[in-house]
Image 1: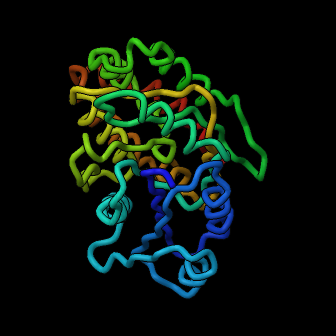
Image 2 (image 1 turned 90 degrees about the vertical axis):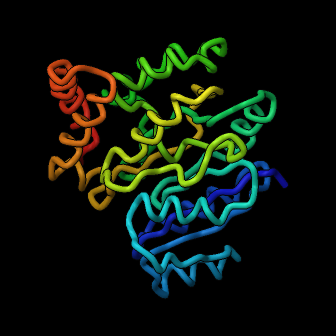
Length: 261
């Protein structure tokens, strides 16, 4: 057993939930797995029972950040990964992430590169993925993992970190991690706060998970109604004067169009 937990945030009746569960069950090292939901239904209950996964019901306010924070509040291990129900993890995700985290002191979080999953196919090189890898290039050098300056400069240009690819060291991160109020940039807002802390952001540039892009995904829905444009601007203003923030947001929004079906 590792000192690590995957928390699956389940919502309604996703046809991909079982595939996500199986990718966690088939990890090369054994981690705890729990599931949380604010939309309880027979399908989610059946999946939890089938795979003997503890299920916790969020009976308070539901939502993305609320469910993530609710899930993290039930974790008793040191390390935690918020697994999105539509995504899948490569068999060595936990092993490789934890190997790096356990050999370095004062780690805030670790994350890997990722692929997109489109129509059942793993896609490695989209325009957006290439941009994100370019942004994260400095963190391929381990000497920069502990640099607040480097990671804040990276985040000042956008959010290249895939949320479900992140594992937190809960000994060094206060809960709740995510702030309510954002619909699409809740993860970027969390990274911005965590980037101010003393400690390391570990980046493994090997793609160790796949983020699914499909018509019913939250990312696709948010992009389609332009909710992300306004929130991106708010985030850029945390790093730049408003005029520069507006200019960067224009180009970043164009690049994000590759996330749409």
